[in-house]
Amino acid sequence: MRWTFPVTLLAACAGASALPTADPPATEDPSGLISQAAPGWKLEHWFNSEPLALQDLRGKVVLVRWFMAPSCPFCSATAPALNRFDEEYRGRGLVVIGVYHHKDPEPLDLETVRGYVEHYQFRFPVAVDPDWQTLKRWWLDGHERSRTSVSFLIDRHGVVRHVHLGGKLAPDTEDFRAMRAKIEVLLAEDP
Image 1 (spheres, helix red, strand yellow):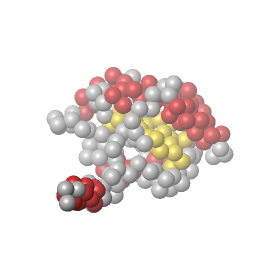
Image 2 (spheres, rainbow, N blue to C red; image 1 turned 120 degrees about the horizontal axis):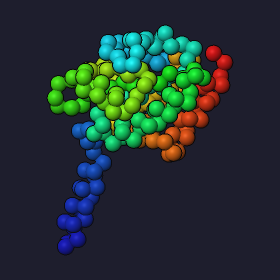
Image 3 (cartoon, rainbow, N blue to C red; image 1 turned 180 degrees about the vertical axis):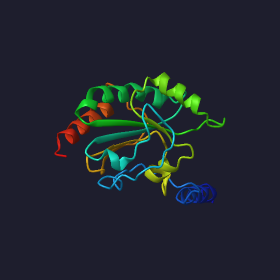
C-alpha cells in the first residue's frame, strides 16, 4: 500500500514525458536540401559588389554564409575562415557571398551593416536580407532550426552540395577542413 502512490506517480511522470511538447524539436538534418537547386534571392542592398543574382554565378562554385553583428561569437569566429576561402579560391572559381540578417532590436541601418563588413574585413560580396525572406526560403521554412548562421556550398550548376549547419566554422577546425575539402572537390569538377 505504501508503494502504490510513489509507483503511480512515477508512472504518471514517465507517461507525461512521452507526450508531445508545444515546440517541435529542431530539425538539423540538411539531407533534404542536398542535391536540390539552390533558391534564388531578391537582395537589394550589397556591399563590395553590384547586386548579384545566383543564376548569373553559374559556372562558379558559390559559398553563401548568413551572419550578423560582431556580438555573435559564431559569426566572429567564422569571419576569418570566409576571408581565407575567398583569398585562396577566388582565382580558381569560388565566389564567397556573405548575407547579413538583422537580429538587433534597433531598426536596420545600412551604415551599421557597412561597419560590420569593415569590422570583419570582408572583401567579397555581402548582401542584406532585411526581413529574412531569403534565409526563410533557403533554411527556415517549415523547420525549427537552432541556428541561423548557416553556410551553403553550391556547385557550378547551382545545386546545393553541402550545408554547414551553423555555429562556428573557424580556421583550423574539423568543420573548416571539411568545407575546404568539399570546395576542392567542387572546383575540380568540370563546369
